[in-house]
Each structure stands twice: as structure tokens, then as C-alpha cells.
Image (cartoon, rainbow over all chains, first blue to last red):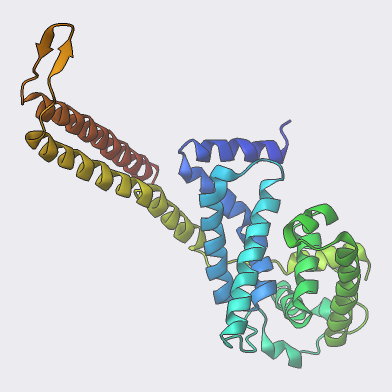
Length: 193
Length: 113
């Protein structure tokens, strides 16, 4: 059975060969994880979507130089992270970075219903609110490690951080995430579904 | 809350962009694919200018007589304009191929839609 990596490489070869409609498969596959990563950096859905669109265009243009040394996902996430960080810096420079938190729902701060008793949609909002509350780096590393399921080496390739920094930040991120979630929704958080 | 719980919780929080996101990206991709690269456009302009300049110069410039042993060969004044016309023909032929390949790419994109 072919590995996902090999299937993607064949797909990339077809795209390079002129069948650009195949790029849709890659966009559909990675848009959600990439969007979550973009949101964790920019903290605003509209900005995240704009940055993500730009990232996919950059990826399409850069496919010609894709060297198959890493997986497509690692390569794409690196583009997404770099694009979002540049946009974040520009916004900061232009003093446009208001305390926007549209990636999460502000009303949830009033929510004291235990985590296990809220529905899936509300859980989703709660999780994103907590991810929005913690430090950008911590949130990004949590998503790269747990959501994108990347290894420390791959995260290192994407962020450029040393592996010791990644491990320490991840440890801190887990603590912050747990602390914020438990502060909002009580101590005994287990997953029912 | 253990490691696996955190993994599961974060996976629940996965977010999605707008429903037409993929279509928007593919529309941009289609535009990029069909646009003629700027370098190609400048090359075309440069080649056309050079060939017409060559044609104009060739009208006024005559090739000198060539002496081989005791014979002198004088070329007709029409030779240079003819050579430059051949050059222009080659350039135009290349342009026609380029135009054809661009149109073919557009057809592929429309067909795939």
C-alpha cells in the first residue's frame, strides 16, 4: 500500500505537469489545520483566511521548487506560519492589532457550565477561546504538535526554534491550556465523546 | 487531563475557513496559470523591437564586396533586408507558438471547470 507521502508526491508531480485542478485536493485536505494555525497566530478569522489564501497561492507558485525533502504538509505549514507571522508583524507595526478575538467567542467568559455538559459546538468555541487566551507561540506549538501531529523535528523545521525551546514551550503550553480550560470549566475535564 | 485528552480536546477545536475558500484559491490559481509571465512579455517586446530595427538598418547598410583569390563577389543590396525578414519571420513564428500554448492552457483550465 502506498504511503500518503508518496501519493501526495505523485499528486504534486501531476500539478507540476500542468494538471492544476489537482491542487484542489491539497487545499481541501490541509485548509482546516492550516486555518487553525493561522488563527492561533493572528487571532482573527478574517485576517487568518486572507493570510491562508495568500499562503496557498505562495505554495502553488513555489511547487516548482518543492524538493521532496520534507512532506508537503511540513512545507505548507512553514509557508502558512511565515506568512501569518509577517502579517502579524506588519499589523503590530501599523498599530492595527487591536485586541480582536474573533477566533473565539467572548461571551464564553460568562459561561460557567462544566465542560462535559456543553455541546460539541460550544466545546469547540471554548477550546478556541482558551487557545486564543494563551501565548501565540504556545498556541501555535500546541496546534502543530497535537492537531497537525508533527514531530519535534518537523516543528523545528517550520518554526526554526531549537528542539529544547520547542519542548519547554510545549510543556508550558500544556500547563497554560489546562489551567485556562479548568479555570473556565471546572477541574474535572474528561472527554465524553 | 492527560496527553491524549489534550490531543482530543485540541482536535475538537479544529476550525474551518469559509465554505467557498477552496473555490477562491482555485480561482486565483487559474488566473496565475493563465497569465503570461512578465519576463516573457519583455522578451517579446525586445525581440520585436530588435528585429524591426535590424530590418530598417538593413535597408541602408550594404555588405562590402568579398574578395576570394582574384574574384570579387558583390552581394545584392536586397540581401540584408531579406536576411532581416527571415529573422522577423522566425520571431513571429515563435510568438505564434507562444500564443497557441497560452490558449491551450486556458482551454485545459476551462475544460477542468
